[in-house]
Picture (tube, rainbow, N blue to C red):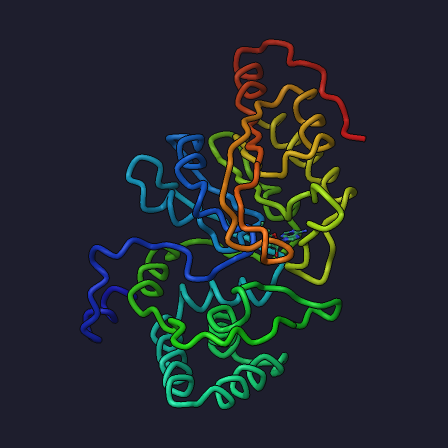
Length: 316
Ligand SMILES: C[S@@+](CC[C@H](N)C(=O)[O-])C[C@H]1O[C@@H](n2cnc3c(N)ncnc32)[C@H](O)[C@@H]1O
């Protein structure tokens, strides 16, 4: 449907590859080749329970060798998932709403831009899906550092970014994303429920809020709920459960010894890779940081060959 509409508007999306349309803390664009390389070649259903900017989903869906047959995408952040729904189902209405915002921003002076930003930021309760999506995209393009951060009440609280000419509307990019999302199931729930129905032949990529390496690097505020040690333990148990059902899993996390050790001792495969981060907790430390990629491939192979797997130790 989107393709027909594009022709009518005279927009050519041919040659535009779908990619993240939001800048997201912890976004994976840097590491994509490493992630794609470690993804299975044949994927029945692809699950991404911590979706954020969806970098791996867009990369896999435009890869002829690995494009999944189905996809289930999830994030606990409800406004984010509403935005994906609007991009999928109402791209033209969204383009029109962003066009209006782009124009208002361009015509305003510095004070007018800041006033527009804070007016939209402080409208926390927008009712219509298109308005919610336009607000999320507008704030993401114009806020300080492109950071999505909410307070305990779930309200977006990032200051104005003072950019001269931010690209509020990327028409072709949004329309390419809309096509990639066609037929995709979108959910907004906790990660456990979001992949509960995965089975053999499916692939789940988990990119949770990172376990902080130090007390000053604890950016976990994507939603009003924190992602602490108890959540990391719950995630490990969820991954153990998927592994015992023969579901291929890959996990990104920080190389903290507590995280690393828990998976290593349980027989998971661990690789450490380096990524340059666009956003971190303070916004000033943009150097490369290590990240571990955990895979359950050895455990799945052991299951397939009916070899007794290594005893699974619990993370303490
Ligand atoms: C590191 S980000 C994912 C980044 C993403 N891979 C990308 O490429 O942009 C983690 C995401 O997990 C979501 N999240 C936090 N707690 C969650 C939970 N309990 N269940 C599902 N999603 C959760 C956050 O809203 C956030 O978008």
